[in-house]
Image 1: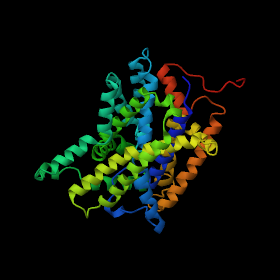
Image 2: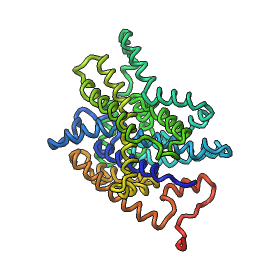
Image 3: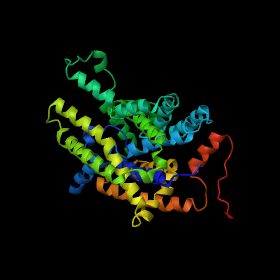
Image 4: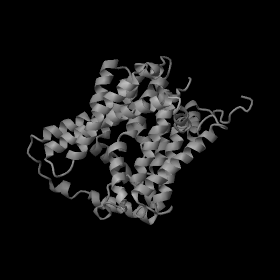
Length: 393
C-alpha cells in the first residue's frame, strides 16, 4: 500500500504539538498540588507561552493524531474486504504492550488508551457512514459529558456521603507522585504508574471527557477514510475549509478563554466548556487545511516534507519524546521540573523536535521502518521483517 505523504506530514505536525504541550506541563501528566501551582511560571513571558499552549495547542494536536488513527484503521482494515479483524485486534494488543512499557515510565501515555479504544472500531465498522458520522460528532464534541452537566444544572446538589469523603485525597496522591518525580525514585515510580497510575489515567479520561472524545475522533477519521478524502486531497476546497474553520473555531477559543473563569456562573462556564470542546474539532481542521496548503505550495513544500519522516515513524518519535522529557524534568535525569520556566521548556521542546526531524531523515536513508514500527510490524506478521534498505535500490 502506497503511503500518502500528506498523512505522514500531518502526523509529524501533530507530534510537534504534542511534545510542546507535554513540555509546557513538565511531562508530569497529573493534577498539580496547590503548593506547586504555577511551577513553570517564572518569567513574565511565561504567561503568554502558557496561554498559547492552553488555547492553541492543548487538545488540538492530539485530535489530529486521533483522527489519523481512525483513518489508519480504515486503510488497514475497513477498506479491504479480505483483511482479518483478528489480525488488527492482535495489532492493538501489541500496541497496548508497547504502550504499557511506555506508561510505567510516563503516566501521560496514550498508546494504551488508543489500543483499548481501537478495539471499539472493529464492531463499529459495520455501521453505515451516516451513523458513524453522527456518533463520531456527538462523541468528539464530548456530548455525553456536556449532556450530563446540563442536566445537573437543573438538579439539586447531591450530598457528599461519608464514604466518598473518606476516599483517597486527589491532592495527596498528586503530592506523593510529584515527590517521587522530584526525588527520582525510579523503581517507586514504576510501581506507582503501573498501579494507581492507571486509575489516575481513567479518572483523567473521564474528567476531561476524552473517554468519549477519543472514540469520536477515531470514528471521524474512519468516516473521512470512507469518503476517500485522503485519495482526493486535490479536490478538497482547502481555502474554503480554512475560512470556515477559522470563522467558527477562533470565536470558540475566545469564548472559552473569556468565560471559563470561576468569576462566571456555572451555566456560563458550561457554555465555555462546550465551546472549548467544539474548538478542539474546528481548530484541528483549520490546522490540517493550513498544513496541506503549505505542502502544496512551491515555497513551503520542502519545509512541510521534512515532517514526513517524523510522522512515518510516529510511534518511535512519540516514545523518544517521552524519554527526552523524562530526562529533562525527572529527578533521575536533570531534575528541572521546578526550575525550568515554561518558555525555556518550550524552546527545548522545539529544539529537540528539530533534532528528531534530522534524525528521522537520516534514519530512513538506511532503514525501511522506524525501530518501534519495525518491531510492531514484525510482531503483527509473526516474523521478522526486512529492516535495512536494499543498497542496490
